[in-house]
Image 1 (cartoon, helix red, strand yellow):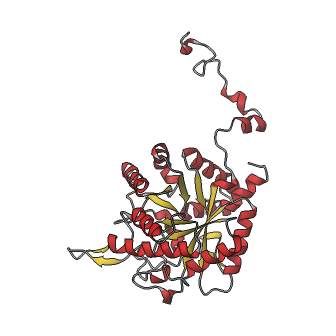
Image 2: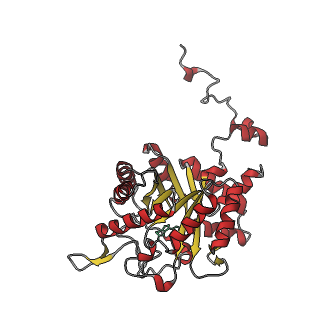
Image 3: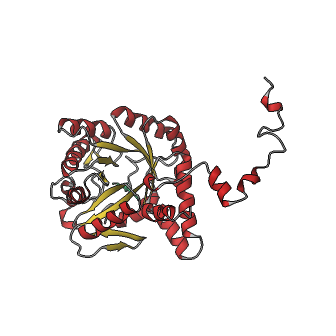
Length: 344
Ligand code: PBG
């Protein structure tokens, strides 16, 4: 057989004209290598205790802390647009916060009430995922129990926190969550949660593991969204933005411990990490376009500096191109609607 590199009709040929396939919208659509679909998206949502009207988050225009009624209505709209999964975060009353975040696993706690209400309303038509982390519920705002270590340093105590995550995941499964989503970056959290779920009879509940989660300033607006009490940062448990190899270790551990999905977060500043994780992961890989990514696009487009819809779709397409199979995004419904309109 002739060596194909000698053939003038191969891609290496100087006669090859890539622009031919860009000539018309139909040709471009026919040859697109990456396509978004409404079912790619997971919509993160906030349910707040003690409010009678939905409250817009000022650093995330268009995103709300919901009442039960507005939450149900927004989930119905998401489903209508073809978004199949929502990820719930709870915003408790300030006076319900304590050192261990106990309202986080209380049966009548804000998050479990939202999970139960959505399961009751939507059954299996919407996948209900719950955030399994304590930072919204602790009075210090950290993702677990804070204790002095043997040198007197204040740290989040890994193993004491795992026990609380186990209680929380089991309470979320009992409330009806299809998926629990540990986001606290404690070592061994996936194994601990898997064991607790299985022991409690919830072998059917899946785990979406925040595997490669960075100590990122892009989470800024989220702290407003959940009324976080955090002072300081999470650098002793979330990853250093300088590191890539470490994400492969984190991901491998989560897979070994039983993660059903792994996740990279944030998304756009970490597309190299996402591509590397997608390359090695035998389980579905999600990416989270976080609050700060959303806020930047909204701020620039509200100033007339970028075209919102195009930047939104370009960033989501890039996240999928890099290897994400599921995308958590505050744009889930807007993007799904645009896709349904046939414009993208
Ligand atoms: C922690 C958690 C955070 C986010 C999701 N889960 C905040 C943090 O780790 O500080 C951030 C999401 C976003 O910024 O959109 N429970």
